[in-house]
Length: 470
Image 1: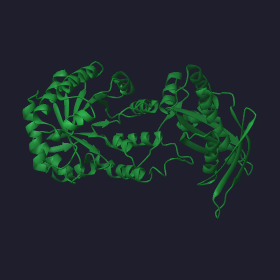
Image 2: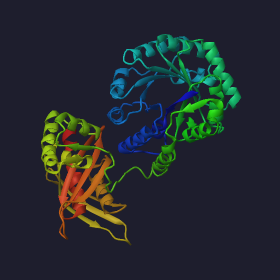
Image 3: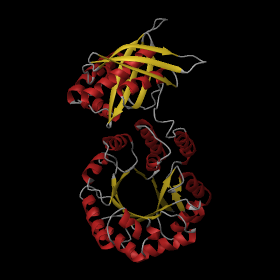
Image 4: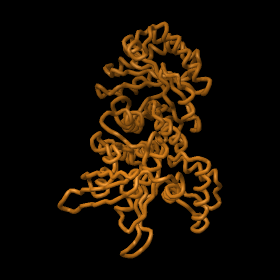
């Protein structure tokens, strides 16, 4: 039985989509969902200039057990930084991505064929300095000149690449045509039999699964897949095919099929419900702690600091020490501490800074027959700053009014509310986590008015951001 390797690019498709905007936390939850499917490898989105991209890779590397693959464009010289963002993951790999058609190699790589061959060898060798598992992706391969494509593959393999991915970017080949193309390229390249071959097929003609199966019959042993059909083979289609005909064709996959339907439904709902317009200001009214994280009094400072880092915080040694002291007080008393409780500990003990913004006053109007409005006045260095906004609920309106005052939008990574005392005059506690330049800043607010607690928590997190930026 031949086991087909599945390389999943769902995360990359989600991040590169122009129709959706996902928060850092939503992308991390998507990664965790894919991890449960047990695909053979997860391809991460390319690392841009933002520190948030590096932090996302590090967070995924710490949270997942599935091997990760980071993309290294042919002209990217930041290999060390890219490797550093994933090197702590299980079996990490690097993948050199090269445009191989005549038009794309000059447009995207800005190189003629001879110079591009030299660049391929140099880039693969540079990646091998950090990682033994290096792949080579020939984008737009079906429109490349066959002689150059074979030379490019040989150059990559001789430099140390152990995996070759052929991309039908156009997606206009019929299944038998694509299978013949793949067989011809493998024959022309004439590389070692130990090299693994995979294909990525565009779904322009809705034939990705048929083309993939035809290529497998010619010797291909890996597929680029995605939960969102378009740039790759659909996960559910290949799963259905293997279930119905895999035994007849002597092929199998390691995908956890029992988890597939539910996970795909969650991912597709997440993408469809986060259009560019609706996700500009994500608002979460609290959530259950389903992270599975639970620390006990026996956990040492290093274990607590590791979990704090997994939650997205980048704290100094001094702040980590403060968090651990507070953690110990809670853990000794109640026996364990969840991630939500650890969030609150970080918010109340770490990065305590002078208040740049102070709440002067706020007036909130809300009801079932009117649109929620917020009128907030903040004090900054003796200057009264006022913001008025409407929103989807009183807390959303309040946060938008604050953003109007400061003239900036920070990604709302998380928002939690809970009662800390009982009775009609109960105290409410709010936790707000804002993300700026890849770092998470948490603020905590307490008040008998839960809206007031939320505003105070937002201002607390905001003051920490301002203090770091000065």
